[in-house]
Length: 146
Image 1: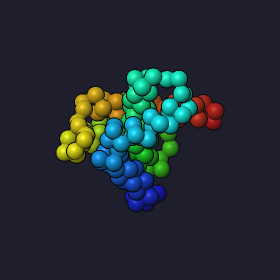
Image 2: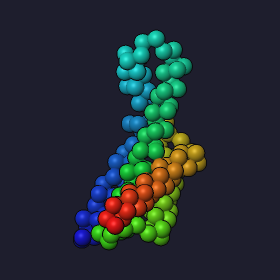
Image 3: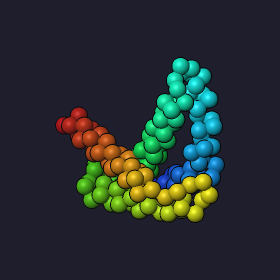
Image 4: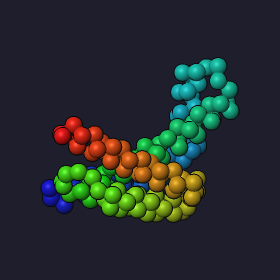
């Protein structure tokens, strides 16, 4: 597999994450969309409950976007080689943590956004979970082949 085919999806996804870190996706902006929709789905919920659900959705977004990022990092590192190696997973987690840190640093300069070590930890957790999932998938596949 060519380096471009290996790394291009990762670079594109990194650009998506970068876009999520802009002023377009501040909590206030996403809340203006999510809260009316959630209120439509669940009209009996209080404003505090709707705000809490919005917060949870945003944090799940961190886990999900970095879970995907972690899988794409692993794909690029593996370079089409079969199986799973601990070194690949650890390298992927390190790259995820570094990108998450740089993303939060970027947010510190965006009006309406702030940097959070807790978000870096959440993002890194998403990347680590992707490596666990990939490892379990590789183990299952190896078990089924034998």
